[in-house]
Length: 252
Image 1 (cartoon, helix red, strand yellow):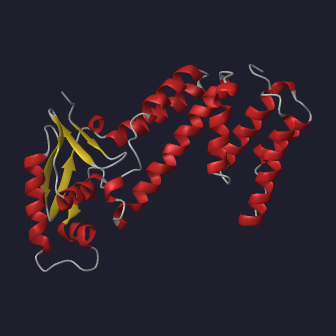
Image 2 (cartoon, helix red, strand yellow):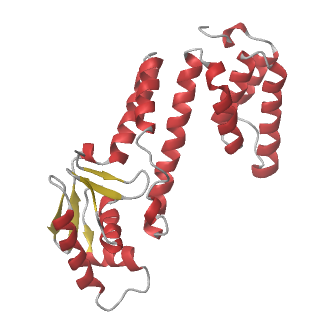
Image 3 (spheres, helix red, strand yellow):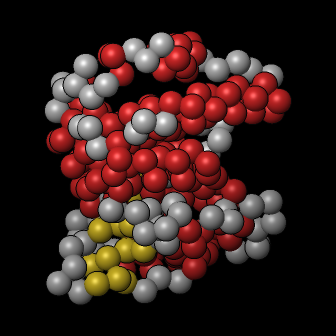
């Protein structure tokens, strides 16, 4: 039997005690519009704009009320839609929303790593990553109002990935992580944290010249595409690799 949940880390869906609950497209859009308000209320006019943009039908305000009624009948307890002056709000315990759980786990992972517990940090970020089932809001990604939230969640997903890779490097698992680090670095060539992780993993794997080329490629790309130089952290890592600094070794 499934646990009640609202899932947005992939196609948007509502899960009740017996599994996913069927929702028509417009009620699903309304759910997303209320969800991104993070417990705040949305007026009818705001919801009309979210659902239809600049060309709503004449009956749009009435249709929002109809969709709200349909959602009320579909949402599992304790999730509910409440009427507020001029509009609606969604009340959902944070632990039932996968995006909220994901963010909490990433924050707990970072806190554990700051305290030196990299194994716990890796475990927490792995739990967080397993919540994803595709791209955020995958079946509603065409909606303009969702774009900032989609970008926020996808950025946090990359941060979680980087936290996990850093934890593996701290635990001395560079050999196990190297292939994934190089793949991810190639996918995000301007994302400097991934490039630094690739440099360190290559160096610890006995591939100093490739680690230095990783830096050189980063510098070229930043200069050509953004007119920037690598950060002080990247320059310092390059210097230490050149000097074969013993502090780069595991446990130093």
